[in-house]
Amino acid sequence: MNPIVSVIVPLYNVEKYIVRCASSLFEQTFKDVEYIFVNDSCKDRTMELLNEVIVKFRVKEKVKIHSHEQNMGIAATRLDGLSLAVGKYVLQLDSDDYVEPDYVELLVMEAEKTNSDIVICDYYHDYGNEKRVCQVNPPLDVNKCQELLMSGQMHNAVWNKLIRRSLYVDHAITPVVGIDLFEDKITMYQLFHFAKRISYVKKPLYYYNRINIGSVTSQDKAIVIKPAIGVIKHLQSFFSDKAIEDNVARAIAYFKICIMGLVLLYGSKELLDSNRELFDKPTINQVMTQPVVPFYYKWAVLAYIAKMPFLIKPMKMTLRILKHFPALKRKLALSALHQ
Image (cartoon, rainbow, N blue to C red):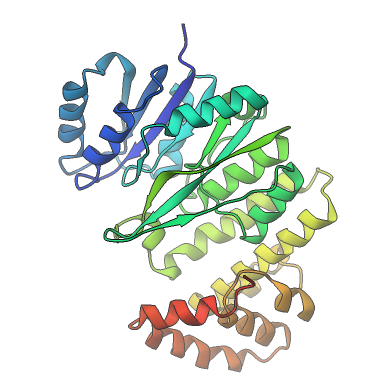
């Protein structure tokens, strides 16, 4: 008989974190679970330590381990995990994070009670000595959730969301191999599009590691540009034959403004010009009302649409300086957000 939940954990060189992550899973109060670990060709002691934890908790019969002969990236790793899953529901964790003991139980109970396709929970930002609660408070309307996701007002992550597995299977939703940043955004806007019901557990159950400087979310912004453009291409293709509400269309425009700013500040005007067909020219009002991007992104996009690219260079130089003062940069970025 298949388990109720499949928990998928991609692994790549996380020897510092895997014991904590795996232990938090094997200590779950909900027991009808299979654990799928996908080894993306780890070069450190990750697998040795994982096997020690499996033996310690005596859960070998609940664990599947799949290994890549060479590193294939997070999208391919998540894809392989999904292909091995047989549970009614799917949870996906990052291997440098960890969870509360009732993480699985509370999410499953909510899904079963409400017959939901997606259940969202709150989470912690874990800075080591400090943990900050992030209250998601999502709207329980699918269309509104998609709007918040696309505009950047809801975290892309799959890890604080229990997903009915049939949603992946029935609509052939998979990560896009080769896009290893923003890969969760691609997955989530498809899942929200096809979901019928969403519910919410108002409790932080997941610890999001903010101190792992080797993680993909801490990479230099320049590295993000290529996958970001890949997401825009996928987004254009996915929504090309689908009717969407005005609020979602507006949110997609907001997301494109964010990526335009990213390319202009950390790439080049020439790169944006070469992908012009992906980006509708935004209005000044759209740029100014974009709800989450920092002011320097807006500055760059406004300079671009005003055909005054010479105004972008001083901002790029300023950002290079601010890179050495991260606290000040965060403060300046937050000052532009609509709270």
